[in-house]
Length: 162
View 1: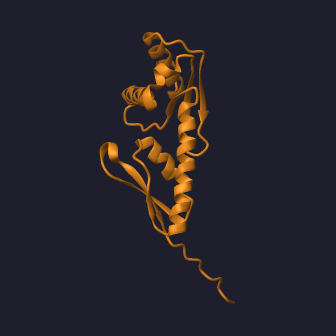
View 2 (view 1 turned 60 degrees about the horizontal axis):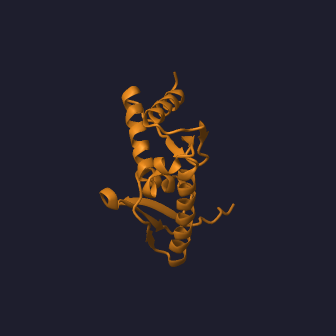
């Protein structure tokens, strides 16, 4: 059984034990991070998502610990989502990060983002890896850990004269 099949079976077992009905669990690949996304389709989304996504974060944490126990020594990056809730949140974070990056460029300074989870910070780091004038840096501790988008002056080298 490969890891994706194991995660799907674990999710099915857990949801059944919790008494939560679901119609499907599908897998897709996030285009920016290249990590799998396991999407649970359910009418009981409010139960699984919780207030501000707290239960969904806990579900992600639980599944990641189970996977770490089953596949020790391996690092697996994936996300469990419910009715594309997390995808919408990630899209909003990316849009906000781009808006703040434009602000950093305009004022040629650093801009701090609100505190976010490690996964959300990883999303923003990945978003700006190929952007030469914006550097990302995590700052703070615990629940106050956030990202700083730093404007970096890009130097354009003149073409060599022959």
